Length: 439
Image (cartoon, rainbow, N blue to C red; front, side, top):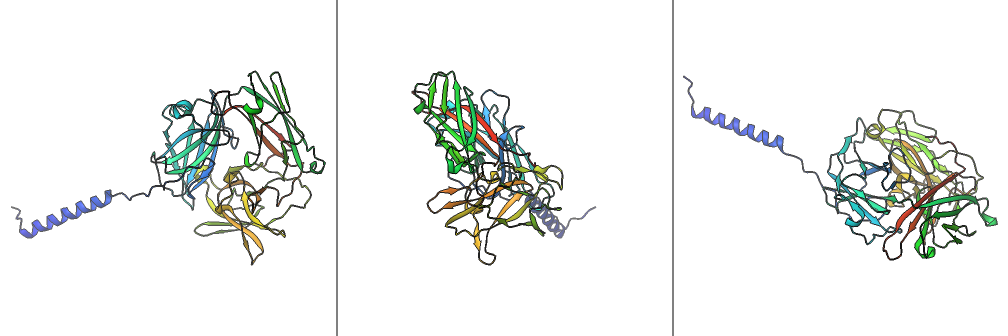
């Protein structure tokens, strides 16, 4: 017969207590800090430094302007990385905006079908990268989020269905194609700019009855999808039956700039011609060769992607989750007296000028330097100068040449008489002097 003594009972109770505590400890979850609340900005914004490599474009048309045509089968795809490397509940919704990217007076019931909110359910964690991250991806419009009017829209991504906990916002466009855009590019009408500028003439053709084109129509013309180099035109030169012409000799005259500088970061093992040094420790640190001030140089044919960037990886498969991040040091050498701020910009940061991509002068090397955290891939970039009075000079360190390859995007907005919002009814694009790409 088993004899149970008081000591045995105490021992059994201690064992049960220990096991219960261990199980409770094992089930305890580590609290994950939520993304902080942010004030919405109607622009392409990453609200957190941990959000990187944001891409938004039509499916199957990488790096093209994110335009969705009402009723079309082609959708838009959004992807981004979160360097916090955990798994979070991200939601998204859309908001209709005016042509100038201020919020329109339309309600969500007027501009969207469905719930106007959906959760991002496609996510994968990085594989083998020194900097871990989670890669998120979603495709829309869908049954939950779908625009039903034309115009400018802002896509908002936020955490835990809390619209104040924003992590990023992106502009996209919804087109109702009722206007045909015809265009041509010429050299500048100004004698002193013929070697440096590219001028557009635009003709709109439509069956719409537009009572006052001067007031109801506006053109937004971008060079290489960049809003910091955009011209807005309201006054046509000729109005005919079903035809409106914008061919004033003094309008839509763009500085052609120069070909973008570029860096090949597809391999952190083999490097590339633009990389001076690679140091791999707990992180990958890359120093690029110093860029020279090309303002006074003659034009030289080089290949670029007109400011775009591409996620690519020569070291491992699947660039989306196999690509790693590196700290990349850019530097610029110039003898100019700089009065203002210098920024490195490109499609990878939406040409935004923020403290993160502002160059600082290093007295020891007499260079302007900045560090960027970039994913493996191909990157076009350039240096721009923002003067003390806020003017942005895009060719300050590159010069401007008519021979430069550029893409132009033309957006046609129409505000119908008696309405209070802008519709996007026409889109056109034209390229000049583009060379075979390197991608």
